[in-house]
Amino acid sequence: AGVLITAIAARALARRHMSRLRAAERRARANERLAEIGAMTGGLAHEIKNPLSTIGLNAQLLAEGIDELEIDVDSKGRLSRRVSALRREADRLRGVLTDFLQYAGQLRVDPRPADLNAVVEELADFFMPQAQSQNVRMRQDLARGPLMASLDVPQFKQAVLNLLLNAVQAMAESPGGAPRELIIRTERRIDPDKRPFVALHVIDTGPGISDENQKRIFEPYFTTKSGGTGLGLPTARRLVEGHEGRLELHSEPGRGTDFTILLPAL
Image 1 (cartoon, rainbow, N blue to C red):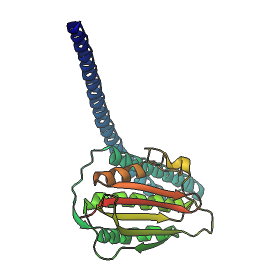
Image 2 (cartoon, rainbow, N blue to C red):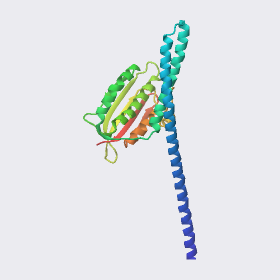
Image 3 (spheres, rainbow, N blue to C red):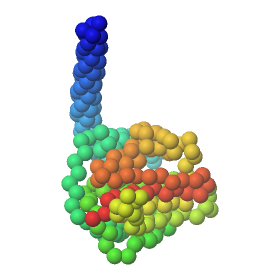
């Protein structure tokens, strides 16, 4: 009886082992397939982007040629509007492809010690004119002293820039007359395990995000904005996580939104 029980147990163990092997093989094949699809779509996007640049350049040359035509004003205006529409669509598609390549491409982060406050000040100076052009008041509320973290500065700036653009676009959809304020705040934090963190808040006074949309806000291609690609926030989160940090969302409909980046402090 003991030998029979041992044999049954051995067969059951072998079946479980084979089942795990087959599951591992399926996962490996799926991962290989995803890698192939990623490489193929990235290559396809690059192939589309090159002729789009040619289309944009030729549309610009066409616009210049139309200006020099000796035809009546109405005809010239009609041709100019059509060429302008062509240029706008080429630019929009180029932007979609750029966002896709940034999101889908292999993430390479080269972090080095940097002062978060200094990085934020540089980015705020760069972004200020764009905020002002949208009638958005932008202010900084930075913690005193350097906030050292391990940052790939260009990649990190891109993540924060995506959040700033999202905030300005959200406020553009606020009811007329509503205050438009964009606040960038930094602070020091200690997590429950007594580990030091640095935090960066991007706060807007826009319409806020509904509970339903908050559940989907980081999904690729999900957007509530007209003309949006739905890749800005997923890309921002991916870049933050590449820095071993996390991106949190706090929002209340009618009262604005706070995207918070948390990074281990040095």
